[in-house]
Image (tube, helix red, strand yellow):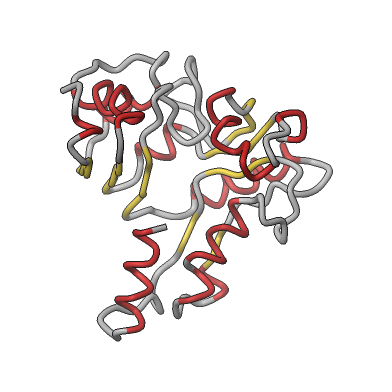
Length: 202
């Protein structure tokens, strides 16, 4: 949220414009309406896109709603294949997930449906009043290969609960059981912005 607020402030101060920007999302839970406050779709619109001058036609958010989540994933995969992404913003997860890509996901994976991990469910629990049974079981995520094709990766981490993930990213070797380690294979630039606590294990 702090990064989004920074961008909004820069826009309101007329220091930057998003008129020529195109936006894509990283992942989404299956089964959520785009108006649901529990969806990434709503979160990104409410916390960033509705407050800047980006053109509506340039917004491409994963839609997890509908009867066929697989079809939505395939449509989004085709959309990504037709566009070259300049920058992707990622967070660090201690279980090593990259987006919703969990352990064992191939580094050549495209946008696909995946089971939402227990760790991710714990992060979402507050949205569902801590009723874990109501949290969706599946989500759509950009594949690791989609992420690796991005020109620049910006990874942000804060707090000791991110330290294991930062260590795996900085010191680990590429290992499909630790998806974030795939960034070691990135051919472009990877920036890591982390506070002292998040760097405590390196």
